[in-house]
Length: 491
Ligand SMILES: Cc1cc2nc3c(=O)[nH]c(=O)nc-3n(C[C@H](O)[C@H](O)[C@H](O)COP(=O)(O)OP(=O)(O)OC[C@H]3O[C@@H](n4cnc5c(N)ncnc54)[C@H](O)[C@@H]3O)c2cc1C
Figure (spheres, rainbow, N blue to C red):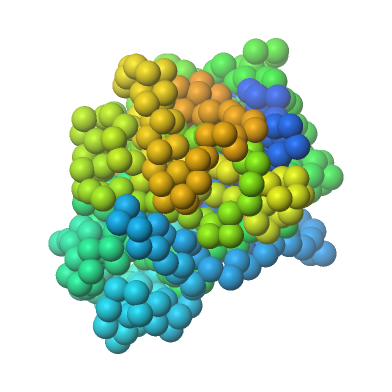
């Protein structure tokens, strides 16, 4: 049995590994020159930058993925000593550690939050996370035998603890008295490109990874995630084709028969698409009726990123830093309603050279400066980004009491139009659909096609959703579905 995979993001690489494990012949086609999708690196002068993701959680998932093919594989990572540093416009700032006790203590000291309340909240988050994970994230919601299992009863027994009737913000507002604490917890909605004022409170489980477990950082940087997955897959016989865009998924009599690419036609029995689900239907499956209702859901946010080599080191900054907007609600309204960049943006500054010293020359730092942005709806991006750059420089210079612009030695910019062009993200959205309504989890595309036997989907635009851990889970679900659909593969 031959498998063709479209794209080489982490969802694709994880699928390649999982399916190779089943003994299938696997080929991966990537439109770009580099393997890795959004998890790639670039060197600008003497600086190294991770171009996409910077927050790495659940490292055991990567370990497990690689060890599935090679039990001696060891994915090395730094466990960071803090989760994030937060800066507010009024000059107040704090470092949030990780671990329930430490977070509760810090929020008590800085914002006067009741320690017991914070502890209770974080404990509930952990229980919700552990109940929801095996029945909503690790399995398909669209296959009866995945979904209906004994653990579902356990998850359902906690139904009233998820705050189904509330938004993330409403739950945080009802829990914490200080608006700044609320803002810190609300920020977790951005981890899958959503708004805390619309996303259901259930998504507050993201706090489990950020505050209870704490973020990690791969040794060598984020790009190691896809580099190591690629190397291992290639060593075990997966074939890779770069600079080769898939132009059509070929099918006959409701079965997959192959792929057409910019270079050739290939026969495949199974195809896994890691391309944004919207474009998979629009561009590769033109003769198939697309599931319009799922695909017309509101899109997740996009981003504008400035990669700056900074000729100075800042002790007040850590690996992850947030400079908050004063009016968070107005910022999300700009992103999702008026679809404009907000005049006082929340700025995320990631500095990998804080732990990977070779990422920048001595005494200098590699800044990844990101602002959440609306999807590309034809805005005047050149003008908008020019204004944004100025606002960011003003805000960071004020907060750090140092003029930042003269320190920039190298610069590159990523933005919604490029995310759309370079990675085929629908309108530059990063995670496909947003989770801006209570049913969003059920309105993501399944990991398999209901119309074509042999067609599967992996990556952050399908179930279970946004982020590296979920993309790995999508690949595991694909492998399970393939085993179910082709009984001869069952071990
Ligand atoms: C700026 C930024 C910051 C982010 N930060 C984080 C973060 O901190 N943590 C996190 O977990 N996630 C983050 N993300 C999201 C993250 O990128 C995703 O979680 C993950 O990398 C997406 O993986 P994926 O498998 O869906 O595929 P992608 O990485 O989207 O890769 C899809 C690949 O398919 C290729 N492709 C598409 N169509 C075709 C075709 N027809 N033929 C051949 N190839 C094709 C594309 O070229 C691309 O390489 C961020 C994303 C961006 C852009």
